[in-house]
Length: 613
Image 1 (cartoon, rainbow, N blue to C red):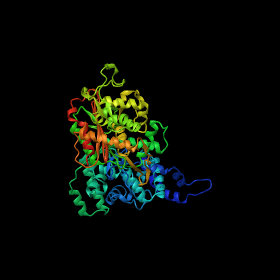
Image 2: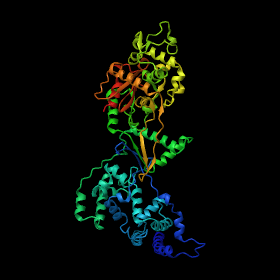
Image 3: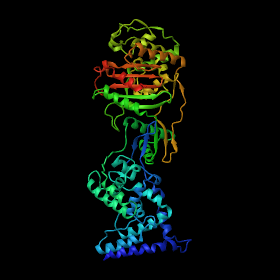
């Protein structure tokens, strides 16, 4: 009896509410109407729905979707399939376009149905009421909550159009498996946009929100199909589809093709999320923000459905990643990065084999020695810049025979050459292309360690201040990343000037407005154009007749680079450039050595693949 009385009161209140909302204005100066009270509790910000963000490649293709917890791809009303709107109106609220937030006829129908059953089996909730329940109220089944729901629903319809409410509704409803909204559900269960779905597929999706567990397509597909049939029946009854369309949809064979969030190139997209954080920190002036504060800021931005446009060359990325599988065994790590010289952008990144989202990013986080590949930066370019010496200048290439093993590295001349060769007096040209160690040490000593290091300060070598500043630097003893090496080598492509290359070309909000972009950094002159030309000549000869002669790029224009091998073959590296690209590659094991791979020259082979036109 109590339940019957309650429903009677709800029905009565529904009728009285119209009168209350439109007529109750007594003592306007001091007393608010019910409508005003409810309106004050409707926070328009609460109706904001988070949406997945995306990362795109240079051609605008989505390569990654970013969800911070709720998988939603916000779809404006104008882009929603008409059949999806019809399906939900037919099944959830057939008088949606006629009522003012609640359906008095539906309430009366539910009242008599519940009267027959003696329980609350039908609630007669409109789409607007469902929106209110999901956002402003709880899901308890009490008459007090039901009355509040009616009040809020009426007021909501005073502030929003029917189309706006439907847009919010179809983007907010839960479709199971963490998918919210019709577009996310479409991509999750059919791997396609909602705009491309058939009537049968839309009816199938419409079936899910009624009970996402019972009608879960991944675990209870048969149940979903049964309710799909009911959805189609309701759509025909309401005149949204014809009998023929109904039959055709029933006969259509559906295949659930479940896919998760797109992440085609996790090596690159993981780097981009890191670069995006740095961009926001710089542009928003958050230099002193803690990690937690930055995480909160980035999460907030990702919830806004932003688009991060990048310079990713997808085909080059695929080639680069594949080359690590081809060149390296499973127990060997590696990393590579490719820069576009013309646009000064990052177009490809690989963190080696078997990389998955969130793994250790070898390209930016693995600090390893690149050996002789560091010589152009610390030894030769500073020496040539300081002295103006020609490449024909002759230096001693033999180590001092009186040196002991304890003297190696820090005493001039106390370092062996590769394979203990004794070349005697050699030109700078010969010393460079054969990567002799003694001449490199001599050049650094002549310039002075501190002076040579000063040339590297504009580059992003983050470990420079962690190293002992001695002659050991002549052989590349500093730990660096392939990211840092590629950035530094890019100066050889720009007449000795440096400006950092970026992956992000622009960040846009949900309306397509540019909200973040790297400012064009000032170019820094590292060494003169004349020095740079000499360095390019040296780098070219490495490929032609030196340690990099196994590289055989079949293309016109400049090709140059430098090999790097560390003590006992712990690391193999190669950095270099063509007219179009600069790239750096590193190969090594977490522990142990890679001498077994040295004859196959994997770093050079990967580099060649990375820069090939």
